[in-house]
Each structure stands twice: as C-alpha cells, then as structure tokens.
Image 1 (cartoon, rainbow, N blue to C red):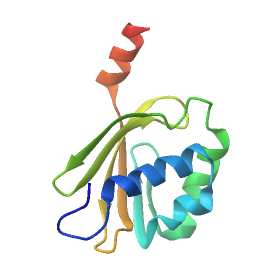
Image 2 (cartoon, rainbow, N blue to C red):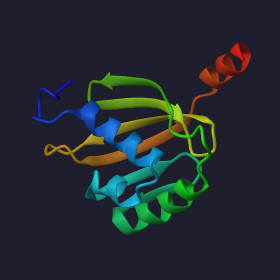
Image 3 (cartoon, one colour):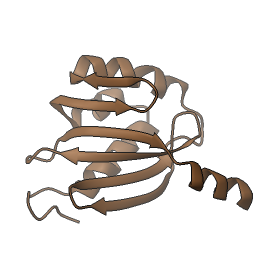
Image 4 (cartoon, rainbow, N blue to C red):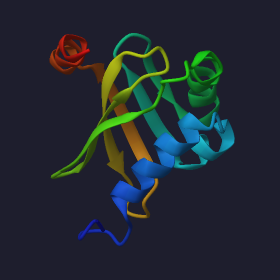
Length: 124
C-alpha cells in the first residue's frame, strides 16, 4: 500500500524494519530511520539520532529470542502504520511508525499489548 500523500510504500518500510530485526541486521535497521529520528520506548525512554538508536537496538537484537519479531498485525493508520509483533523478549508489542516525506522512519513509539498477550496465552 503506497502512502497517497507521499510516494513511498509505508507498509513495505515496516516489513523491511521487521525483517532487519528478525535477521539481527543492525545497520539495515538503522538505515530505515531518518538521521533525526526518535525511538520512544515505553520502558527505556527516548533515543534520538543514529548513535542513540544504535545504543537502544544493539542489545535488544543481541538478546532476541527465536520467536522474536513475528508479526501479529499490521494496520495502516491515518498518519502512519501500527505494528503488533513479538518483541525481542517475546512480549507482544505495538509500535506506531511515522515517516518523513521521503519514506524514512521519523518516529517509532512502542507499548506492550496486554489484551492480545492474554488472548494468545488462553489460546495455547
């Protein structure tokens, strides 16, 4: 799905993001972000720019479990994309993605998804 206001595939960028996470390719992951991007983590605070994002992502990719970064839901939003997935530690997370006009990620903001985690536990 192309972003009609900008000429890039926002869903494709998010899929590239999750693929880079699954494959533990830190440079490929960071290349998807704008130079001035912000990662807002519900537990660890905000990380601005490539060097801070690298400090955030490096240990998470290194500690990721085998089931990490599996997609549960990918939902277009009015101003970006929402992704529900398994985090590096296996918890179900929701990350909201916002983009620059050129298709780089300018913001990711995550939060745990409690209701989905509960449903998945019941279903097993």
